[in-house]
Image 1 (cartoon, rainbow, N blue to C red):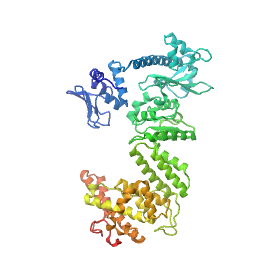
Image 2: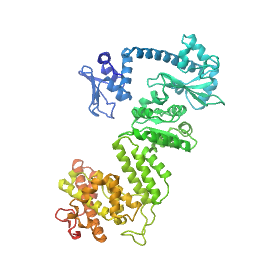
Image 3: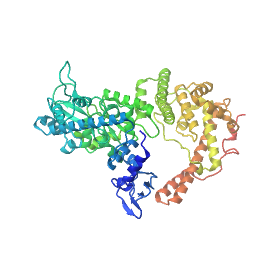
Image 4: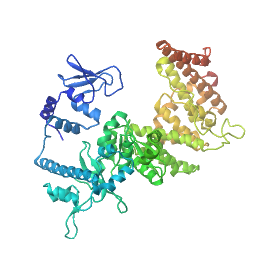
Length: 625
């Protein structure tokens, strides 16, 4: 809803910035301002200021700036309406009501909250009574302390209709208890009865820590093992996460949030000191819950059992997240040992073992890749084509264009490595010796990465980009060169990102079909969105500098010219790295910087004139006109 400006101004007037910020940051008065250590970065010297007169805070270390609403949103992962509601409550103001209907709904929600909170107290008290002894023994047997039981307000639902009788005695009406799902309607003319009976009760809180629903675990035999509240005006299970009210602060501090599968997993993790854990409420992860998680941490870690069912659940979550991905926000997946859940691991092996599993969590992209490979086994051209098509289709499901492009690039890179590793001995192609040799299973360390232009100079950077183009065009016109150049070209990273994608895609296609002719290769690449790049490359002045790159050049000429150009690329990159090391040594004359500089200097050797042509790009002896 849109809040009236005068309402927001009244909150600001009643709550000085220092009073709100001071609950989280230790402030020291300096003149008209307060200073303290930044809550947004780790620092030892205060750079965080608060000015009550101007009504804002400012952090010089992180550039964060804003009013009391912005401060709560940033430090407690609240939305703007949530921040307004919390500060209004602190200021003693009622939230504005837009319409009579909204006012009626708010009044009804207040009554429902009263009923649910009263039921929560009844359950808590019952757990400590003789009739709740079985429930308390169960929780103690799971290793929970009194502090943890109190922290999560765990309780016990007694048998019979205790909740109904006590709440009606307090003046709450039966229709309210039915709407709050505390009672089940009687069938065939019978009276309503308590929804939860003879169960350990797990209260479900909203983000302000108020009970809105419950989950109940049966004692002994019976079905269902877990019983959960149905949706109500207060509770929508697809839009909430169990334990989020307690986990949000620790998650913000750790910049990590853990997602387990059940109530006891969250509670067991908290008992072990991992306070930043939550769980979905009996359903598969929803889009709304993923967005909730991202407000606490950019890459939540989802924990799943290592069995087939757990892997299926992980894949469902990954599939649901794909359209929602955005720069900087994704998911990670930690698979538990078969037959164990986070609570088991914490109780039997300790928090350290759980932290190790969390540290080994796989990124969403890796989960998707492994599934693609599992679903498309085999090395025939048809199966490889199936894997490639499935990978590109998967990438197209990503909603954000920037992230989608990165997925396409990643999948092309993985496809290239996968096809190369599985190709086995190759018996054809220029450079094969002794009947061919297997392609390496993994890419070796790149020969060089692009070096910032300021270390090459403008002319040097232009010449280096031209050499990179020559290497790529020579391969495009002579695909049979792949045997000879793939390890070196595959290990490069071109300075132009589009040409780098073209490099990866070309190598992948050649790996799939070693007999590919250059015309067919060009057609494949054009169909995958590289038509403009091919047009620019193949109609540029490259052939003036490198005649050996022409389709009509002999293979031997193309090979010698490619090797020479690659050597010059390496030389230019090495000299630029040497200049960078020299600058770093001047700025930071440490032993470490000198050792790095000396190593590069020894590697470069005496710098002399290369036998380049006039523009320093190609070798004139290899021109073919």
